[in-house]
Image 1 (cartoon, rainbow, N blue to C red):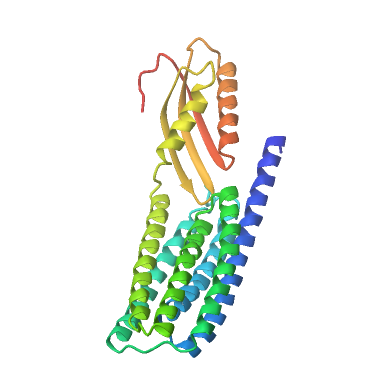
Image 2 (image 1 turned 60 degrees about the horizontal axis):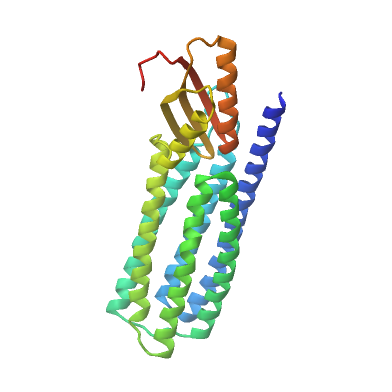
Length: 304
């Protein structure tokens, strides 16, 4: 194993360890929030708090799915999966989205029921206290998740983080609902805000589903990344042009293919050295990339 391969293996191990810790942290945080919100709902009867409870339960299930997906995605490529197991993250994200859509139906049912049969929230201070604790726990988890996402680019952790980031507004909304209902006798505020939260959850679930579908359908990397890859290649003085650039993402891995046009008088060994240098520079910018470069003479006109 070369020094470069050893460094990449170590980098992959570090990314995997961060992703695993993030998955464990999500399960723990979600479980803690579910328990305390369940207790608070029993005493308050707030439907907005119920929506938050159900959302936390969704987060626990989603985080458990993520934990499984992360473990599977980190399995190295084998004879039957030459491109690795990264797409299991996208499959897990779709499962999360489907589960979220189904759970929101229950929230909508309860909110409509409370609109028709309004009930005043009880033990308002208990509900507010629980939501403040939820905010602190959620902020801590989201900050850690975002650190992991910056280091790994994990789709599964990104999808999980969307849940918890939206929970911050979620929790604030629940506090507003409890205050209006308990202290100002605006009873309908509780179910109305619950309906708004349900719509917001649906929107986030849709975003998660679209991100996962993009990966499963091998959608190209964003235009800015593609242009950055082109500029890195063209920065080499011996590269005349770049064409046939193709890219896709699979979990934390990126796959890039491109053609380099070089002076047709160059010998094969020199052309290979140039391609290797370009590959190393692209890898420096995208450490989790698997790159294939084809060398073309500058007389080649078949550009893809």
